[in-house]
Amino acid sequence: MSLTAWKGLALYLGVFLPFVYLAYFIVPKRWRWIILLGASYAFFWNSSKILVIYLIAATLVTWISGLLIERAKNSIQKPEGRKETRDERKQRRTITQKRMRLVCTIGILILLGILVVLKYGAFIQSIFIDLLNADAKILPAAVALPLGISFYTMSAVGYVIDVYRGKYAACHNLGTIALFLSFFPTLTEGPIGRFDELAPQLRAGEIARRERLVYGLQLIVWGMIKKIVVADRIAPLVGMIFTNHTSYKGVMVIIAAALYTLQLYADFSGVVDIARGSSELCGVTLAQNFRQPFFSKSVNEFWRRWHMTLGGWLRDYVFYPVSLSGATRALSTWARKHLKGNAIRIVPTLLPLLAVWSATGIWHGAAWKYLAYGLYYFALVVVGMVLEPLFAAFFEHAGIKRDGLLNQGIAMMRTIALVIIGMMLFRADTLTDFVQMFKSLFAGAGTEPLVDNLWLSFRVSGADLIIALIGGAVMLAVDIAHECDIALRPLLLRHGTALRWAVGIALVAFVLTFGAYGPGYDAIPSIYANF
Image 1 (cartoon, rainbow, N blue to C red):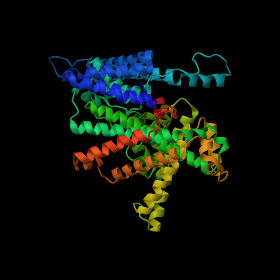
Image 2: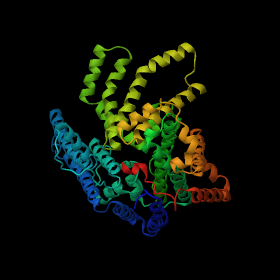
Image 3: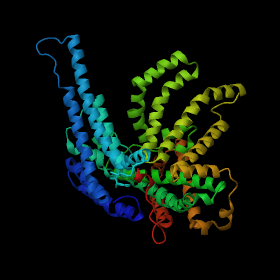
Image 4: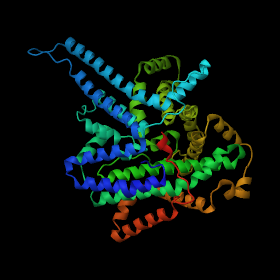
């Protein structure tokens, strides 16, 4: 089962989740983690069938790598009966470090190798075929991907690196590793878990008490509003314009890109909310993945608020290691000798930033447009760093407060515009299509199809668009409240049971009444489930 269609969502919420919660509640506390493990593998099997072998392989590699790193760390003991000399200590640490690094490297290469072959193999093959002008093909053009392979692979790699760094000891229980990588709420679209945060909760066997249970259900309903009321009602209009993009120009392309940005936010954050709510029912709190991203005042800030667990993972396991690498240190030394001013600070960051943004793009898919998507943000970040001193001087000279309301609003709108352009690239079928659409932005007003025959042309009713926009306005209102540090859930809890029930029933009724499901609606896959 997956959350790629409303029927799957109905089965998940109406059958699977209640059954799991009931079984979890009934069994003794120390065995509850086994219920979660069985449910997770059943969830995975229903979606990916025999491809579960890849999840099992990743689990075994992760578990064994941790144990071997621990063994390598303790492979050379201190001499008994006498004090260890400084040279002996240095030699022991050097040897153990090399052994640990070797095991860590092999484990990571195997984990990433599985991901690369399955997800990127055909793409890499096509590159070599084009370069060599050859016809031979080893891999099929499309390979079926296991559910959540990008998500659980990143969690696995993070675990291996953390054990190598000594952040925590290796886990000796294979079942704990298996549950950590396969926990069913996180398989579809994350969030990406960290072992030290997630594993203790998974093994604790805690039951969600009333307040936590209510919170979990609220998250699920809120996620459903985002997914099937907002995102799925926008999808037909967005799909029509992007599929037939050569027929539209100007404002129509802007509308499509803006609506897709709303669709992706509602879809992705909605499914993650459903996942977080499902997890809360089992007494497990997942990491927050979004924090009002469209209130960001820079591209950097946007990515600190959007897909936060991906950004945190790339920071810890890509940015920091590359920043400390010999190549970056050499670049920093060169910059201090040959450059002046702001360039001394900027140049050494180019390599780690390039690595992070390239990885961000490639993580999303095997296509040139995804790499271009990452490099687009790399360019924006670098340009922002270069221009920052000029902006600072301008504001100081003009006597404008950078934290003033007007300037903050302008920065916010500028960031949204840049993000919408990035989303246009993300949604376009190919890099060529994006270039054509971007050029069409300046080709004229292009409002005729919208004015003359919107509903017929786009196969979407006026009611669909109005309902989606109302849902989007509700999302905006909630984000505004959170941005102003207004905690809605505690506020609701303080106003008595009657009001809580009234709000809950109203939200469920809103989903049932205005959700895009049933006859006349096509199943809309969850966008990030493909990654």
